[in-house]
Length: 59
Image (cartoon, rainbow, N blue to C red):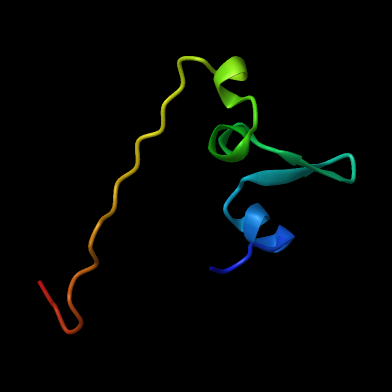
């Protein structure tokens, strides 16, 4: 399994820089927070995956 660097977390917008400190976003807290059910009891995440067209596909 690959480990995530700070840059990866910033690219995924799971952390942001605030006053020269890296702090988690709401998304970061929902995905990886220890007390996420306490902080966001009614939150849920919905995700979708879209397939890319095949190589050489033209309309």
